[in-house]
Image (cartoon, rainbow, N blue to C red; front, side, top):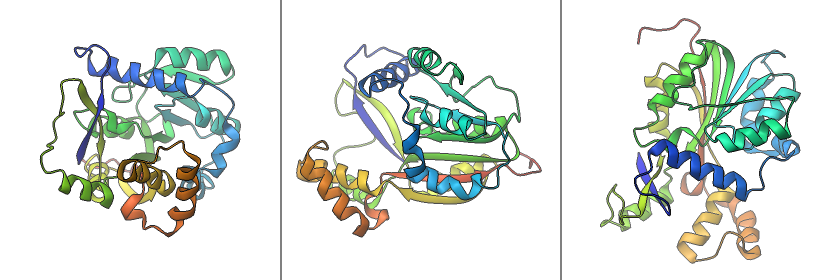
Length: 269
């Protein structure tokens, strides 16, 4: 597992939980706040991975969206017949979601300690959230295990410590797993396939699949970090679309998406 850091422009003494909430509240504001973006979801890689499992999930099955952000997935799955609770740490974002989507269910909560009942969900999905706590992913994974029913499915993604990152780290031998400057602080963990599988299995899950996704995003990031081409440039976006299909996922894929199942019989832990 590898640590990533980000620049903290606020109070350096802010607690981790407050920093995470403030950071993502601002990110959701920058993205324009809650809107109806549900039409995009069937085209997303995460959805394509979920589809074979969703086809076996009965209508009315209860879902949890852990770290729901702008609520797109919560709304989409609820409208597809799977009542979904959107849980997010950002109080401001949840307030706006409740106003914009009054027919849907959103709550403020910490995915490490949700306060939700044991074995209360048939499926749990969480995109890019488990990695944002410096103590590690285990509390998030353990809580997911607790709230899922026996046989319940977990879909979750984390940043991929791909070959490009490994090569960059090997070339940057002076930088250790510590911030380089006083205004940097922990942002996320980055994992290999084996590390991700191992953490899920350690918490009791049966790991069904781990896929590398987001090659186009990975190429965009490579173009910026290795060649200085900003993400938003048309040239960057056109090049990433053209190149991504031909680049091995192990080299550039941005995220890992795991599918795991809570056993029908809870093993000793």
